[in-house]
Length: 324
Image: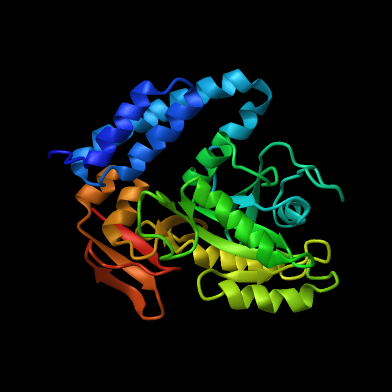
């Protein structure tokens, strides 16, 4: 199948050949990935570009030494979310409150100097959160790379200190890196190459003016993004935040059993909303998807071991028994 690459791809390719630093080359390769149409004809090229990005990231990390650990954080768990925000919003305290991470925490700004991953438990799955240095005047190339790779972003604001201004500054910084979070704000790929899911977290709900500022923040952005109020210091709203994160990801948990055996409800398969039986089988093993004849399904409030074909759409909590 031909790749059918658009003219913008070839323009970016010319720019790539002229680029000097690994950082420049990574940014251009990411742009080429975003421009490239997604179909079977581009699978090989997409894999090649990913390999180039990986090698260049390693090279850039070696050059910057101390920040190596910040640049390459592999995804673990059901999803990877990057936590961003202005200085002194309580971002690190929030991450520490809902994960097993131990980022540096202090009352003064810029305590966080590197990216720190941690795992957040939600019911029977784990979701990875990455705490990052505060955003101020620009987004460094390695952080941009991390934001692009992430499944979603968590934007932490200080409810006691003009959160609308903070949010506007974050949106501008992201758009300068060609990352969008507001649905339908831009349709021009010259402006936004990467559209990311996001949750706005109004933190420090326990401080003065927070109860006044939170409704204003929600009124401004609540029709476009989830807006959740928390106090990491007082541990307020953290359970609601965990549920909000899970629902934003649009994923489902599917459980498996073998014939005449009990089901294992401790280790679900994580799939996208709308996934089929065939996709679930392939997730377990690529040959299972090819050889699947039918499955029995329990769950979804209406199934009780009924037989289903490979194109059956699964629901969160379904239990499947595959037959080859």
